[in-house]
Length: 279
Image 1 (cartoon, one colour):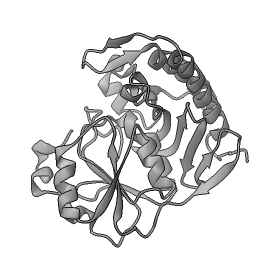
Image 2: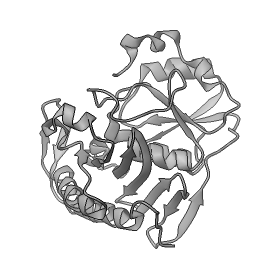
Image 3: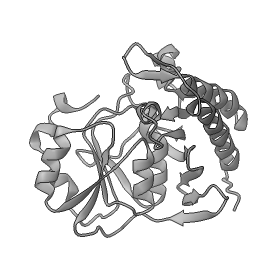
């Protein structure tokens, strides 16, 4: 199957993500160095190599659109960025800590954001060669390394015990409190935006995130999960949206597909206070 889309070239976006992934793997197989950005987050040659491939290639795929990447966000004027109605949102290497620790769960994330909504998402896992993509009119799909494509459908009815996704690299005391209220569950861990993809392929029922994320961490995965039938909502039940303010940090959120379960009712009251949110 060769994916196409009316308004944007999905196949070409996937190819760019795979090219970025190949550059990442060249570094991954080497004795690479790690530096630190101003916020003390790690940075490698792989982040920058993938960033350059995506920022060079994406603008030529459609009418020229700006590219907001984790690696160029600090150089973009906030007022200019907030005026964008349509742009590419990129995390060239999501899961840098997984990459540094030689854990294979890192991804390349590319989303198209239109009027604050992630309308297309591509998540590529360089180690496995698996691509996930989703768009509202075309559903969500997994393309294996051999090119075999499978449509994805999130779990509309959750299991007992509930299968919950947590972060491999970011332990969270708030999550422990939430799970205590939730009751019987099985906690699974995954790195990077693959948690959204696990939701899309019905490998889990719930992904609660009570720690900090940036918009480039979530947009592509959200598009995939929502194209598969899941919801991504803040702690008040409102959809997660993009480029709505001066900050590029997300608030806390939940991802789920079973609309019958009262997922939000288990959120501790202390997390609903504005001071506890990431924005």
